[in-house]
Length: 269
Image (cartoon, rainbow, N blue to C red; front, side, top):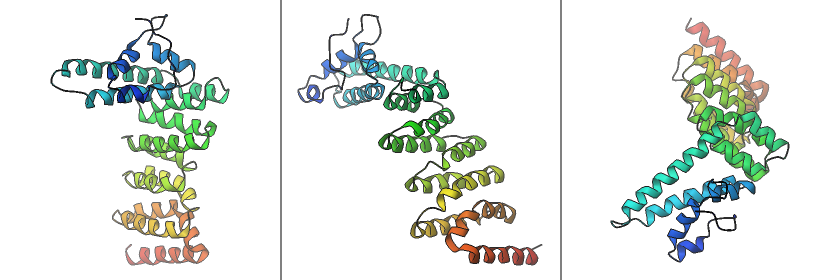
């Protein structure tokens, strides 16, 4: 079936309100003259890939809210269709190198919204973080906030500790204050002494810029959590967090910390 002429701004919520859910599903399965998905083609030409993904998500939700014993067979078919569409967009995003994606936005061949939509659909967390960490430099403030939040969530999903440390380090100087505690928590969860120290060191600069009222409680909780490890581990972590210590107490605090290190080393050799 060939696609009819539609406004590609959104799937109209009026269709749902009028009980015309079938029209939404019909729209999303129509084909263009080239044999492709008509609604995707229309959205893509306007740089509205993110809007297309939203439309698919909304249609998928509608299948759940309009399911009963009679419609269940059809609903199962619809749901599989939308799962396949989502996976196809993910595959397309995975095949676009992050550097190419960023370059397309940088050279204004893609809109920031279009670049972000494809970056967010990358299925591999490590690749998603890498793409988003570069892309944020070319996004407007409202999209930058979303990109960084999604990038941090992807970093948390990375299982390999070296890769997670690398991802957190790449994001460290870009994260707003509101996301730094979450990033710090992810760094503290790294068991490898070396990789944890690397992530903490990268985050320390941003943390040290936080207001004292927010930083001091965060520091106390962090130090308590770090103290459950061995002394060599803690010494590495304290070294990595030196900018935070200085921000909290200046030379007086760093001198006191140095004395504490010397004293404890003398007491427990």
